Length: 233
Image (tube, rainbow, N blue to C red):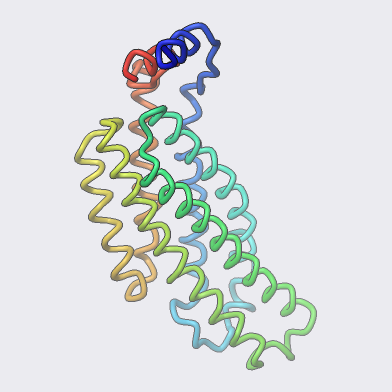
């Protein structure tokens, strides 16, 4: 009786539908993240044991990359919301917890790395001669490298694995996108410290998935309403 009542409630209650254009949030995140990563990779040495020459030669480029990060983070939150909306009531609790947790951890560590780098830029602008070669610079540079290249990218890999598992179980995306995501996530988890450019694989995969979702939404793809959810429950 209770289940029948819940189904009737789901059929009669109005539902808030996500607009099809919301999937563009993932595309926005991907493009902004790619621009930020490319600027950083070109302007900043790949290893933290540098002399700090990038502070003089590429300060403007790094500053632009850091200013892009908050907007990329906002778009990423919307992208996570789009994925959860697409999964609907069939979101697996175990993988959904890992999916959401890894996504939030990735975003938090991305912001932390950007904040530390921004602090280095501000300190250099006020006392350039005191910063270069100091323990403060070495600590900040090493901390940024570890947060972004080790922990943030590892969480990005976990996010991709959990996302692919959820998408496959709910058939919300083609299997080839999920299999590609598994392969790229494995590369992120294993080889991210060997090549700094490996980090671009994450936004590229998000760009692919978001483009597919956006096209499917405008074609009238598998977005479940309250009525459809009740019928499949």
